[in-house]
Amino acid sequence: SIQRFPIVEADYVASLEATIDAIGMPPVHDVMPMFHDTYRSTGYRTFLLGEGADSSFGSGLKVLRVASRVTAGPLPRILDAVGRRLGGELGRRLALVGETAAALRRPIAHPDSVVASGLTFGDVSAIRSVAEEALIAEALTTPVGYVTARVELERPADDFHARVELMHWIDGLADLHLIDRHMAAATGRTIAAPFFGRAALSAAVTIPVGHRYLRGNRGKWLLKELLARRVPTYPVDRRKLATALPFSRYFHDGPLTGIWDRYEIPDVFEGPVREHIRTSGSAGTWNAITHAIWRDRVLDNPHYRPLGATTIVNRDGTTERKQEVTP
Image 1 (cartoon, rainbow, N blue to C red):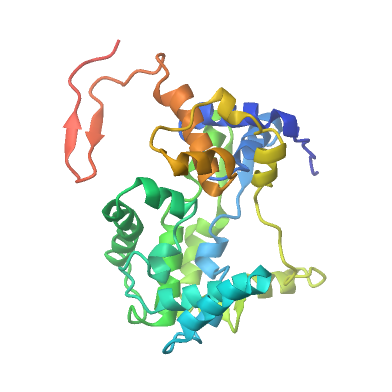
Image 2: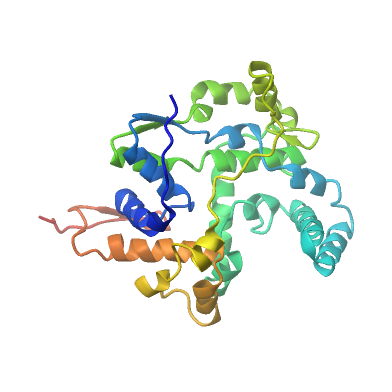
């Protein structure tokens, strides 16, 4: 049987706070409070997640495929310039193809390569205004180095399909359902992600990368073909909706209106970027909101004290052990 679980939009901030209390970290996506409410409020004990379908079988590759055909000479720069001048949705798409084509020409270890830059989400322009370029480059390229040291690519790294494969391995090894595991465990539930299971991954890697992720411009085509066989009446190529909330509306005219009256914008944002975070309703605003709530409710919470003999792992790989024992 299917349970319908009502979500009360006016309760969103309380749900977000409860989610951060439960998982002890800022959630990645704005829909995660809805997941947490569902975990703790329904009678189901185990939840199935679709995580892994994209990283194992390909998704969101249409722009990348189109861009791969226009990487020669000045074409990327021309498309980018024309798109920006044209404006509108068509202009945005042309500029995106041009930017992606330019990124495809860069080495995979470059922070602005299609592999590294494609891993980011959030307001990159806001981050660049408050963080050093070296730190940003390190954050972007570290996942690339981690995966290339552990995964033997089927094709040379400058091959289009090798870059697609590398992007998908990085996505898959990022442990995308870590927060879901925290939310489920905090509510006495369990989760399962079949596409991350050994059987699904073992089957996926037997398929050459030139066929695994794309057929023409069609992504995730293998799963669509299998679904069409099992459920012939299902429209497998129908565009799906994103797992996301209308954050801009929530911020400007919804439950997040006035959030900066309740929480202080993180100090890292200063000057013009602070005003941008306060008013824009961008992805950077979402990151700042979740950090501010986490800071006040978890990081600076006087009731939460470090455990005795906690090991601290520094960015350079060295470790420190705290000697004091907390009662």
